[in-house]
Length: 111
Image (tube, rainbow, N blue to C red):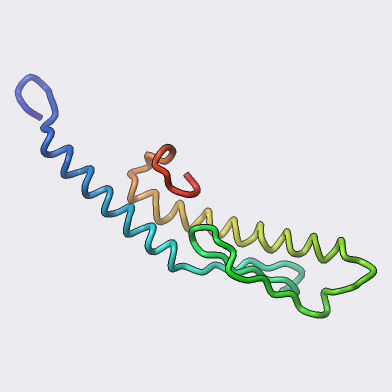
């Protein structure tokens, strides 16, 4: 701090630039990450990026029953939710340190 208790603007700018670099690095790591969610003992699986983009859905033929489509729909939804929870946890782990716990308003998915 400067005399009079005012913060040094140059120091604040350096801290902001460092945070910006950390956020960019964390976003790159999230984009490269692939998380898998599954349901029904692996009958349905979903692969999602760390940014929340669904990359693929795999359905084991054993899960397909033309007379019970609702169960398959439930399995797909559960697998997506499972992958999304893993994505949220990874986002918190990567972005929390980068943002110093600031969270909302930074234009970061999941915050």
